[in-house]
Figure 1 (cartoon, rainbow, N blue to C red):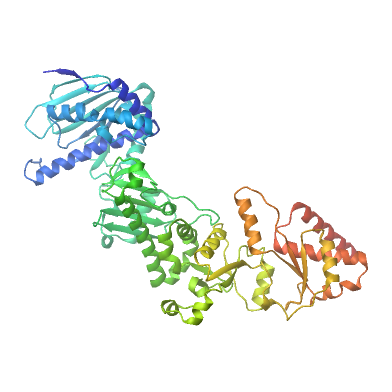
Figure 2 (figure 1 turned 180 degrees about the horizontal axis):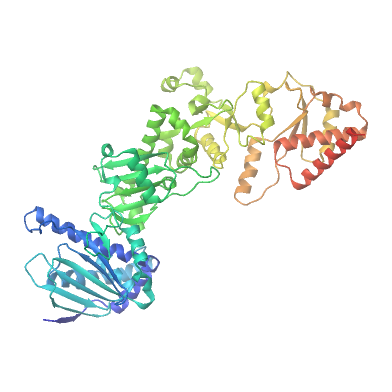
Amino acid sequence: MRKEGNIKISSENMMPIIKKWLYSDKDIFLREIVANGTDAITKFKKLVTMGEASEAENEEYCVKIYIDKKAKTLTVEDNGIGMTADEVENYITQIAFSGASDFLEKYEKAGGDGIIGHFGLGFYSAYMVSENIEIFTKSYKDEPAVHWESDGNATYSIEECDKSERGTKIVMHIAPDEKEFLEESAIKNLVNKYCSFMPYNVYVNFKGDGNDKPLNSTLPLYAKAVKDCTDEEYKKFYTDTFMDYNEPIFWVHLNMDYPFKLKGILYFPKVKNKLELERGKVKLYCNQVFIADNIKEVIPEFLMLLNGVIDCPDIPLNVSRSFLQNDKQVQKISKHITKKVADKLISLFKNDREKFEACWGDVANFVKFGCIKDESFYDKVKDIIIYKNLDDKFVNFNELLGKNAAETEEEPTKTEEKAKSEPVTVYYVSDEKQQAQYINLFKDQGLNAILCDNFIDPHFLSFLEYKTPDKIKFKRIDADVDGALKNGDSAEDSVLADIFKNASGKENITVKTEVLKNTEIPAIIVVDEYTRRYNEMGEYYGMGGVEPAQTLIVNTACPIVARLKELDEERQKFTAAYVYMLALNSYKKLSPEELDKFQKDNLTLLKDFIK
């Protein structure tokens, strides 16, 4: 008997809202329909285990997708629990729209962020690409099969049909402007995107000839116990999931059941460019059903630099961002993931420091960015952050301060308490090639510095000073002349200072005379650390800025400088200007104008030399 009726909500108002809110993600409809099919199978299997239903012998639980370009239909079929006529009325016709009026009033004004799954609308997402939908379903109960049909407007029809096998078949008549969903390649891409780890096999255009292969993996590696996974399996899973053929350097396998369920694998990828933070992809799943990539409410922002898969059944498949932001369970999940990543890094540092140091170049930016963005992460890993020095050896924060591990655990003495007000100065190098002259000066005198040549380092050093103001301060190797570089106190030579100041052509330059231990270098330029940082910060944020004032240190111990006063005025000026350009070239990359002048001065010297 055929029955017709009216949907009890103003559908002509509801359907445009569905399409409006979900237009950018309309391809998600396939996830919804397939997920409904797997859910129906799970429910049936539960009844079987309870003894309330029986399964056929050697039955394969699966979801099959068929594409018929001629008929312009896309069909999704499962062999799950099925529905009776009453259940179709309740679950499809009525429940789907219950509460919809509240939705229209609340979400349309407030700017809600996703309605699939709200108020039972998962099935109706298929209308984003369909002009008409049919359902053929037979319940596991001994009741007639049912055919339901609606074009998504205010009417529907329901009647008995001759479907003989248990389960549900949804036939979507694809709209003329959505023909892409009738292409097998497009559907397979969607299955790979949304259904790659569905708990039951998913087939496309199943033929039943024994040669069909499912497009998904029903037991992904992250669902297995850590002890059952090999390194090769971890690497293969990484390659297959992220299409990255560079082996990850290491990974963190998450597997817990209390106080919430959480499984997953986070991979530390090889860094392709140390001058930038490359965004990774962390895929979030709910019971092996894909939700989205990089949901920052669940996965801390800095962890999105990694590649990984997280499966958390405690997070609803369809949920608003505002819910995630305020849900305490979600916050606990986020903190736990952060803790497990920190634990992995700490374990590697303590148990295999050689490997930790070998891969530091790949994880340094990630760790530093994580410290800046997440205080709890910083508190856990601050003692394992390492820095390479001029001797090509790695030291951590405590070692920079001259402490060993035992000392850091002891109670501080009164002398040590007093010393806290006098932070240790640590010198760093930001560009080994550009600052080579300063490095040689340091090495000649047995001094050391650390390499901080990644783009994040200026921010990170300032962050460390902010966190530990009484312990450490950083100076770039060209920020001043350390006492160890000098050969005693130097007498001020105002005549020499005036000669060099005039020759430089700079109004804002300061000239000092010193006796340096290295007699081969006539002069070096230094710039105050914090003035330079302030200027660089302005440039970074696009505010421009005036070049910071320079100090030219003239080395009176150098023979060239010592003889300068013996020269006539013209040669004095030329020599002083040339020495300044040598010092400037060792400090920074010359501007086009400066480089042009330097080249002309070199030509002048060559002409004099070959006379």
